[in-house]
Length: 130
Length: 237
Image 1 (cartoon, rainbow over the protein chains, first blue to last red):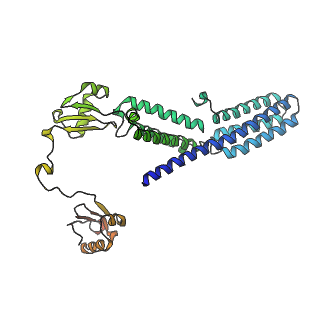
Image 2 (image 1 turned 30 degrees about the vertical axis):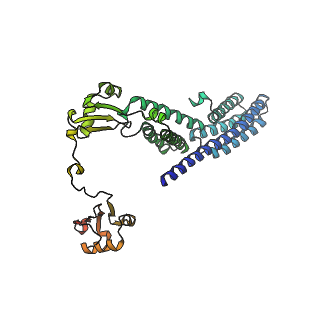
Image 3 (image 1 turned 180 degrees about the horizontal axis):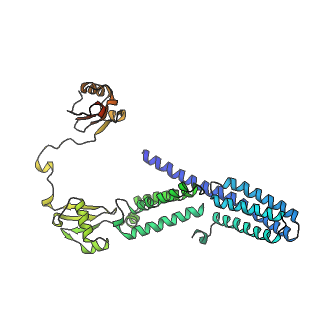
């Protein structure tokens, strides 16, 4: 009887941990994906329009967003991914401040594709799984 | 996280199929669905344990996925005969009426050497001693010896059999197990009386005290107290 109850508790706990670990990162990465990509697109437009001041402001906001989200995602996402995203966000600020349009556009695209890759992991397709 | 979970489930199914197809030789006392988890779990746990940049959940999620798969298959195996046959296979008769069944031997990927080695491990040294040898679903070989090789039982010989039951270890390394003492139907008064009778002050001087099924009490003192072994006859006195 004891073993039976322990088994049921273990199965229920396993389900709860799994459900929590699916829902929490999913919600956090969704936020990062939708807010982050729209901000990066706005930054790209600002850069192309020559508005570097706005680009710097957006780059700082993107960095804050990434830092905030990554703090919560630390137990779900590996350290290398977090450091890489943060480093790329810092790079966008530096390039924006240097008014280096080519490098800034490159950094924006890289950051965007990294965020998209992270989002793809949480919303996997058959190809992502395999 | 979902990717980790689904990948773990896919790997479980894949390794399970491979183990099932490789045959019973690989099983070593476990059913295939148990062996898969034994094989995979250590590797999954060692990753996040040794690599601090990897979140702990990257180890926990796949292990939980394997755990749930194992529970699911164990449940289905209990419920359905068809799934049991599919997951565990069925036992194979390798020796039938003293004759090796070559076809079954081959289908189990067993060589004659393997069979003879397995028989030796069961203390059967000649094939003519074997009436039946059955390869169980967990890879163990069960042997039924020929009538001539069977050991006579107490019943065959008309002798009163000894009393069988569980031995209770009531003292282990100087520690008194009160639960075992109660389970053996004895109490602390009895225990203290025995200690005084043997000349010991308390349980800390005893390495081991066991109450056997026939009531005899086996006691060994600690090295520091001479390490003497006492065997006391049964009875509650």
